[in-house]
Amino acid sequence: MTIIVAGGDGFCGWPTALHLSDQGHDVVIVDNLVRRRIDEELGSNSMTPILSLAERAAAWAEVSGKQIEVRTGDLTDYDFVRTLFTDIRPETFVHFAQHRSAPYSMIDREHAIENHRNNVEGTLNVLWAIKDHAPDCHLVKLGTMGEYGQPNIDIEEGWIEIEHKGRTDRLPYPKQPGSFYHLTKVHDSDNIMFACRVWGIRATDLNQGVVYGLETEQTRRDPRLVNRFDYDAVFGTALNRFLIQAAIGHDLTVYGGGSQTRGYLNISDTVRCLEIACANPADRGEFRVFNQFTEQFSVNQLADKVQQVARNEGIEVGIAHIDNPRVEKYDHYYNAVNTNLIDLGLQPHLLTDEVLVEILDAARKHVDRVRTELVMPTVTWR
Ligand code: NAD
Ligand code: USQ
Image (cartoon, rainbow, N blue to C red; front, side, top):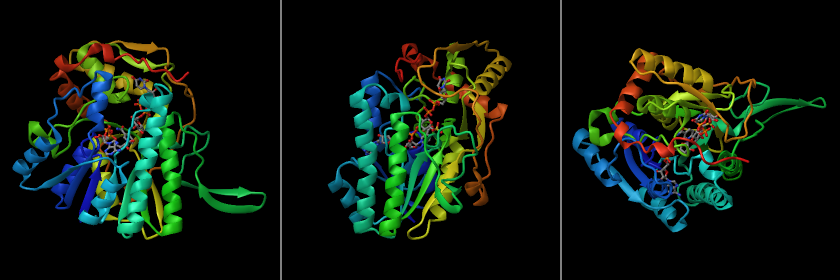
């Protein structure tokens, strides 16, 4: 299959591109490298030293004997997107290429608008290019579990049967996202659903939970293939941040009460979920939603696990309950369905102590690269 992986220089996109290439697909990475520029804007860096995208792709060719073509360009530039589709004629378009940080979208008005412009406009360009130039192409789009918020009922996979005044319908599940970033994903889902209904496009919306981990089977093959590893308060995510904090001897930064519960998954499962979605395309006109996470944890549970595993490794680390920079629910009900990917063959890598130790060990190798002033949050929701 010819697959474009847009956002293929990022944390999820790079290992996914390698995994799909390893499976024998013809993979083309598309990325405008904005994430590397945002690192410069924030004075931040990946904890692991990552090569340039061209050097990474060359290293993969050397290690695997397989070529990944790289195209540098911006999904908000329609001429670029149209040319991609007319040149490459992809059978699948995997879309990771967005600004993905909730705190980044909450910095100020300019960042909120840029977040919406980048994410919503990029997806609209892809939809129009599919309609006009590759109508059979399967769009595999990364959404987020955060689209749903934390309702006081079970979270279904995209749709819910509603009975109202004696009539019933299967309707899109209500959305209550927690940041302007998460809102961009809601707008994308609506736009994609509309395009499927009106133009007959085939699409899968992967509502992914928080991803943890660093390496996958392919990135482990050579140090030059290492994945990026974010630890700062803007792009770093909960569990990875806690493991890195343990490695550098920083108290674990639990925001507020710590009972906030989310769905989580290992990066090794992300790449497998993408493989499954690509191999089992949606039908023409079908807008399909998969909830892509494997386990649910509260922030307190994650902090306790990390503290315990660090202790077993000889590291004493405290847990700090700091003022929550965000506005979010505590002690809420959370029970989300995630059966679609499992039914298609996903075998989850669960969060065992061994998994935690591997990530902790990786973090311990690079402690000298951490800029400690980036660890505490500075962006607030209020
Ligand atoms: P990332 O920031 O590491 O990677 C995103 C990549 O997209 C970057 O390389 C960036 O340069 C590129 N990009 C952004 N805008 C672009 C544009 N307009 N044109 C071309 N390239 C562009 O993020 P990630 O963690 O790999 O996340 C990938 C996707 O998965 C995002 O859509 C994100 O919302 C979603 N997701 C991530 C997580 C997570 O925990 N990391 C969880 C759920 C969903
Ligand atoms: N949290 C802490 N301490 C920290 C960091 C986070 O307590 O140091 C808490 C947050 O308050 C929140 C939870 O951990 O309750 C998750 O926060 P996060 O930063 O790990 O994740 P989030 O902002 O939701 O965003 C990440 C990715 C985003 C993706 C989302 C999936 O950056 O791209 O969409 O996870 S989900 O959460 O399912 O929406």
